[in-house]
Amino acid sequence: MTFRCMAKAMVAAVALGCALAAPAQARDDEDRNTNDSRPLVIGHRGAHGYLPAHTLEGYTLAIELGADYIEPDLVATRDGHLIASHEPNLISTTDVASRPEFAARRRTVMIDGVPDTGFFASDFTLAEIKQLRRVQDFAERPQQFNG
Image (cartoon, rainbow, N blue to C red; front, side, top):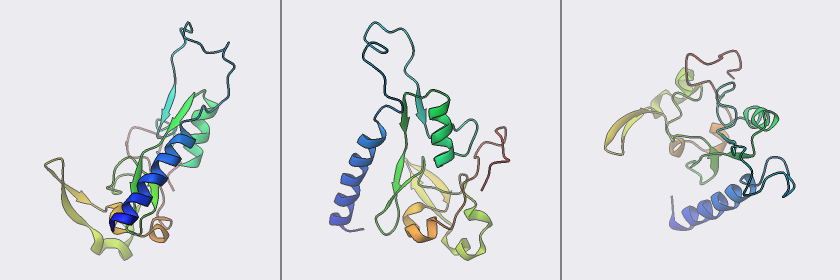
């Protein structure tokens, strides 16, 4: 990825972060002020305990459950687009491992000094990412919404 492409991606990330960091539901200053003892609720990855992470449905449910903010994670694709994903490795959050057309993309990389094997967003174009389906990455959480 070129420097110009990386710079554009960073600007887009900041813009998206600012847009999504806006309150999920507008509140009057009287509703939430410095004397308010209610906790601030942030829907990190959406309603990840109920639905697969970083899905529109998960973000919507988090808002319906009362999240004050929605906070996504962003990673870049090979063609410089940003996608909402907690990790660059898509192996546990998508169905990529079950797709034979992408089998050759499996590789091992060092992340924070630890080898990580899987399928990385930076090896896929946005069009290819759109072919994948999200899955719940924790076995003990509901699996019926995968896909």
